[in-house]
Image (cartoon, rainbow, N blue to C red; front, top):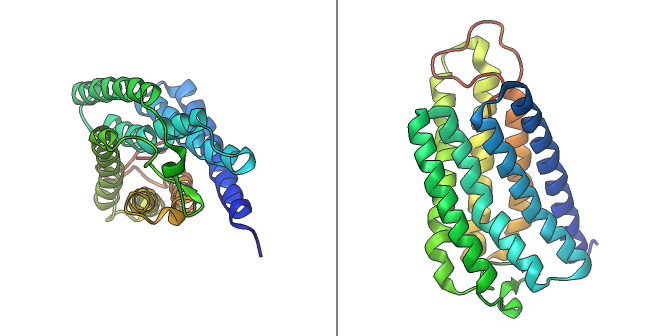
Length: 241
């Protein structure tokens, strides 16, 4: 039987590898097409991979205050928020996306300062063999909950809306399935984070892996060239909400 730490290390390693490979693909698309949502998604995937990478490092060498701070900022606080922001850039008017991004960046800077300044309680941070958000003062929930809620609603809602708009076209079937998978993946990550905050930390690592794998699979589906023009409101070939 695999030891819990070894199992968590495997889950975190796999999630990190998928996230980084995914980020490279999206950033390569950005290098070719220079579309804002690609840059934001690429950065978000790097943040997500940094968070799961911290989990992997901690399973190998143990948690430290610095490692926990990086994990909290990248994985717990900002990864989902910027994935959602990429979807806003894809689906919303540019001026609205720029405004929401400016607010998100400002909130991110406030979070960075607080996470760097506040003390870490590693004894409370680790529970049930997995990391939790309890290593900092509950004061940080003022930022954590709205950022994660914003990111999840934008990512999942945008994917579901795109899947709904493209449902009537046979030529767009693969992309419709892909955007639905993205929605399920985003929801899986969000549910794992919610379970973690409610006291079931053991689900976090597995939900991260399943969620990012579903989002990646959905992305691959959306990149399949259509046989005809896309239905109105459907995602472009290189898009992933």
